[in-house]
Amino acid sequence: MNNIICIDIGGTAIKYGVINTEGDVQFTRETPTEAKKGAAALTEKLRHITRELLAECPDARGIAISTAGVVNSDEASILHATDAIPGWKGTSLRNELAEFSLPVEAENDVNCAGLAEYISGNAQGAKSALV
Image 1: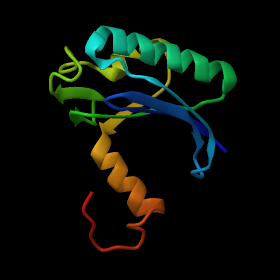
Image 2: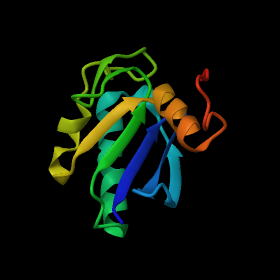
Image 3: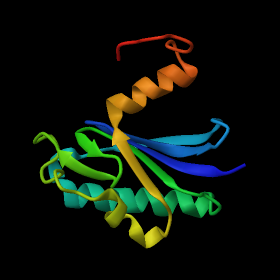
């Protein structure tokens, strides 16, 4: 079974942990986002989180990130964002985390929430749902 590092960047907190490819949560943690410090501080925090998780789970096969903003999921980059995270627009999460030599995927946080509800939540089996 493969493990994936998962990071959800919220307005007030970053929730993160490791989930296996069967969907089982191995463990989770939380830290303040401190979004007003800007994109450079946030990406440094993402590198710190990734190092922490890899120390505990060195067999991780990739990094999955959910974040606010308009996300180019093909490139794992932020196309547009509000001023909630200064400088977030244009950030390439794949480039920022390249030092770990793992695949990095990113998606909009609301899309991720909808997908999670469809796969294992209240929208399971629904033909349509609003998130």
